[in-house]
Image (cartoon, rainbow, N blue to C red):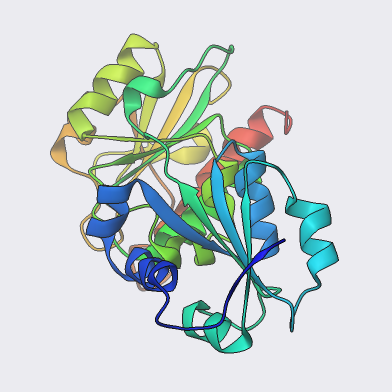
Length: 266
């Protein structure tokens, strides 16, 4: 028999709200919240350990939940419409919310073995919406790994999960300091192409067919000096309008799909 929660004062519901709102709580417990059927399915496919799934039978049927997520390791809980409304960020998520364990995203756990690697690095991205859009772009290009240098935001922030439409789970992801990542890329003999405006070459003149790492910074501050001085090549996107910068996900999209084009989209 499934457990049922009808009170918004239930300790588990309070825990979910804390996990949604407090990065410190997510780090302390090693858990985070996923909202939406598609996002939960992508998390499971990405190897995340789902501990608990809560659903509102007013929105989704018990049978559908059992068919999709009725595994012995997942604790299924039916919740009232009032409780769902309390913990849901948006109303169009099929009435289903999960608690999952986080992963250790340390660079040391990133295992890249294939030939002609294709990696993208974003340095110090801060806004959850930009990070989510960047992850969607990386997923579309099917990169071998996404590395976040000096992250300013907890990657399990609900706004990142939501804006990435689950691409937080579809990408092979790691984090580290700029120095650590540069050391890692050089050990792997991956050519570093840093996207900067000054003293750089047009991106379309480069050879991206071998081991390649595309490095992008924030629109406001760009890349740190460390990337500029240690890169294999500094590259830029020729701008023909009045402004001289692009949103990080837009710039990444242009550069990543040039890599794909040169590799015949393989």
